[in-house]
Each structure stands twice: as structure tokens, then as C-alpha cells.
Image (cartoon, rainbow, N blue to C red; front, side, top):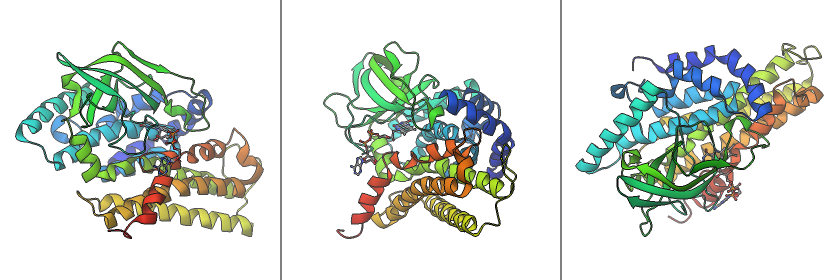
Length: 387
Ligand SMILES: Cc1cc2nc3c(=O)[nH]c(=O)nc-3n(C[C@H](O)[C@H](O)[C@H](O)COP(=O)(O)OP(=O)(O)OC[C@H]3O[C@@H](n4cnc5c(N)ncnc54)[C@H](O)[C@@H]3O)c2cc1C
């Protein structure tokens, strides 16, 4: 890799002041972080997970996790949207390389992804992944969006809820099915295709910069060259490499780290805009701070281990690690943010300090499907008892 992991993380760290400053406005306006994405584009970060032979930095999933975590430290909503883009790059890059395809499928896929990656590297295209329909938490079941085959491609009709990057992405990458066929297809719906619209208000509790409105597709034309994975390969990916469902976690792990940064500054009396001086001598605050550090370290250790040890075709015992990591990162994010409010006291609720926003953002991690906290706990509760 010409640009290594630490250089990628450093590029994000160098953006810390602007990411931190802009996060306030994106949250207040519930607006998309366009400026951050322009900077990512300029720094090559939109193409970080594009394989080197296609002009990207060839960052691995494990590299991505560290970079995403760093983004989340300064702006959770930017990290979450950055994830949707990079998840597509990883499904179609590193993960697709590890999966089984026929020679014909492999050739077609190479041809298609070469153009998709070119669009990211040269044109700075942004991809999103609106999968959720509100029907079922499974990644490979319960899809109501239909792709009707027509000359040169498909006509796609359906509705996706919580479509992050609404109005900002160039492609809405959806999972859908052809009528009468159970196979999941992974298609890139061009944002400017006729019949595509983003509806519903967006004035949520947190993660406001994700702009996750409802996406409607009404007979929208999708060319065959936008089938990002051969038919059925998404099912294979979800079953053989479900580790990518953890890709949302580093956003929230980073957010947890950001909460620690703010709390530490507060306790030391160094937080810009802080009304009072240092508070670190108070024993109860010290205990709260200790608990926050513990929760953060537990979450990080589990997530790093799950990603660094991820292999194709995990056993149920392997997945226990993945579900534990997802549960821990997401639940600890909310818990740490809540403790931070207690430790930092009344000032924490003031809008001119960042904790209030981080607290709202952190609450939402455990809702993220397909590996939401409830889903993970349900699976953990049964795992290894019935095999
Ligand atoms: C800020 C934000 C951004 C998002 N961005 C995207 C995006 O870009 N793309 C995308 O595809 N989705 C996105 N989502 C959607 C997210 O992944 C979930 O699909 C969504 O929050 C679920 O909402 P729901 O109303 O359908 O909840 P429900 O599915 O009704 O779930 C409600 C609760 O029940 C639990 N639950 C549901 N089913 C089960 C089950 N079978 N077993 C155990 N527990 C279960 C859930 O974990 C949840 O806690 C986003 C969500 C948020 C909050």
C-alpha cells in the first residue's frame, strides 16, 4: 500500500479542527456534511478502500475501521455516512475477491467494478446503501423492492427507509429482487434517474447530518452495468462474510472516544467555552471517568479483535465474537455518553458544548440493523446451545 494505515488516520486527524467545528452546524441544520466529503475527496479518502490496481489506496477493512473511528471522534454523522460509501467499496472490492464466482461472473464483475471504482477515483462519486425497508432485520430476507428486467437493465420500484446520504449520494445502492426470484440483487440506482425521489421530513433526535430520509423508486431505470455484484453474490457475502455488518461500529466507537476527549478536557478545565475551572479532584467524577475509560477500552478491544480475526465462513462460535463486539460498541457508546453527562454536570446539557449532541448521536447506535443490539443479544442468548 503506497499510503499506509497510519497516514490515512493522520489525514483525518489533521482535519480534526474543521470536522469538530462543522459538526455543530450539520447537527443544528440537520444538513449533510458536503464540505467534509469535499475534503475527503481531495485527500483521496473516498477511494481509500478502492483496490490499488483501480487507482485507490487499497485500504483493508481493518484499516478502514481505524480511519472511520478517527472520523467518528470528531463527527459521528460524518463517520456514519462515510461508512455507507466505504461499505459498498469493501463489498465490491476486498470481500468480492474472497467470494466464489464463476469465470463468467468474475469477468463481468471486474468489468463493472472497474467503471464503478473509476467513478469514485476520478469523478469523486459518492455511494450510499439504503437497504432498510422496515420489513425484517435479516440482510438477505424480506426485501420488497422489485427489479423488473427490461432491455439494457431493470426498472426498480420500492421504498427504503432511513436512506442516509439522501440528496447527497450519486448512487443509492439497494438490495432488491426480480419478481418470482428469491435471489437478492445489489443494484446502484442513479440518484438522478427519473422516478427517484427523497421524501419525508428529517428532524431527528441525533445523527442529524446523515440526512436519512425515505427513498422512493418508481419504475426507475437502472442499467445492467450498475449491478455491483453478480446475482446471488450479495447473499453469499452476507452469509460467508457477515463481518461487514460491523462496519457501522467504528463510527460509534470513535464517537465514544470523542466523548472521552470532551470529558477529559472538561475535567482538566481545558474545554473551550467551559464556565468553571478544572474538576478532576472530585472523587465521584474520577469514578465516572474511570468507568468511561473502561467501557471505551472494552469496546475497542472487542471490535479490533473481531475485525482483525475475521475470516470467511465463520462458525457460530466465531460469530459470538462479532455479535458481542457489535453489542458492546453500540451499548457502550450510549452508556459512556450518559455517564459523561453526569460527570460533566449541568454544563453538559448546554448546546454550545459538544456533549449534548454526542449524547443524542450515541443513543442511536444500538438501533442499527442488521446487527442491532437486540438482534445480537437474541443470537447470543441462543448461540452454542442448540448446535
Ligand atoms: C441515523 C440512522 C441512519 C441510518 N442509515 C441507514 C442507511 O443508510 N441504510 C440502511 O439500510 N439503514 C439505515 N438505518 C436504519 C437502521 O439500520 C434500522 O433499519 C432502523 O433504525 C430500524 O428502524 P425500524 O423502525 O424499522 O425498527 P424495527 O425494525 O421496528 O426495530 C425496532 C427495534 O426492534 C429490534 N428488532 C427488530 N427486529 C428484531 C428481531 N428480529 N429480533 C430482535 N430484535 C429486533 C431492533 O433492533 C430495534 O431495536 C439508519 C438508522 C439510523 C438511526
